[in-house]
Length: 219
Image 1 (cartoon, rainbow, N blue to C red):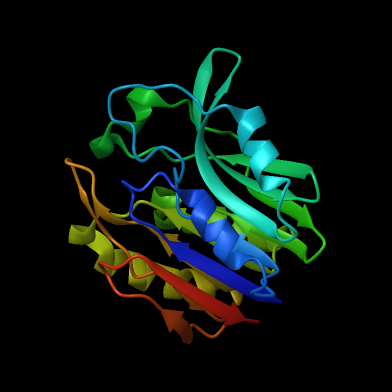
Image 2 (tube, rainbow, N blue to C red):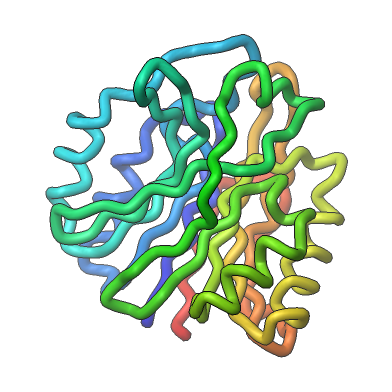
């Protein structure tokens, strides 16, 4: 399986360019960071046009993981979607990060991010979820062989991101794929360092802390 990680500038709304560039790459899954379509929302906001997002993703032959603010029944969720072949599954972030005002903007999810895919069972845990080892353990026990961690992890704490990706891989003997944002949104600078750790904690590939980067990893 070939995975393409998109380390995108949080202020760059053009996710479609990266999808176009992935055509012909033989990628099986293209994965973006947390809140790809909007950047972080600190003081409220609106969900994306879900029908338009689905229409765009339907044009591509590979599976896509993408983060976006989702409006549902009058509430806003920090959501991460797996989209493939016209069908989708969504994980709503469970552990919201109060220092970035998430709990005032979003409603927390309640169900762990288990994705039934043609590649097997995949797990999702978003950014601050990384600090909750029991969530990763639940995903592994329920059959996930690989866990994706879309993030908007500030650069000031990106050392924690790097360490925790490896720790979660070792603790659960599982592949962990961390996809972080870069750039500065006027409130926070984000620390990149997107990476893939194998079940032994070995890092197969890792981006730098500041550049928009595409990483291709074959597992």
